[in-house]
Length: 144
Image 1 (cartoon, rainbow, N blue to C red):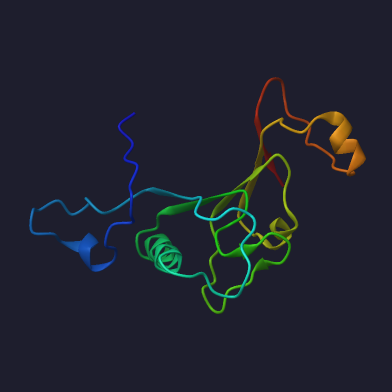
Image 2: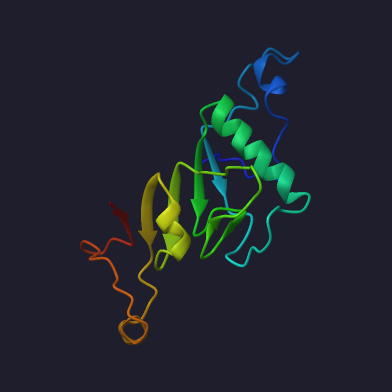
């Protein structure tokens, strides 16, 4: 598929306008996948190098109109409380919850999907989790 997987986010903003090699789009990305943190983030501000990566994702989202997709819980969000950072205002365009939406998803305002049929029915019943009615053999469903 020729999809680049990067070890770091390339320089943003100024580097995306006009580089010396004439390739104006070499640092432009249509989609950014945020999967930096797991759901155990605590505190009010991510530490480095994560804070810089999150700031760069926000810059790419706002300046380049890159679509920002977060996996399970957006990075820097608390699993229960949502965005707990001081002023970052990290708000992805799309959230893909794994297995079931977390409480923080109540504060999410973009397109929301749930993916995976990983929760056994007995466990879902034990914890009162209502799984979405996946159509056919689909592994993902958009929530409204």
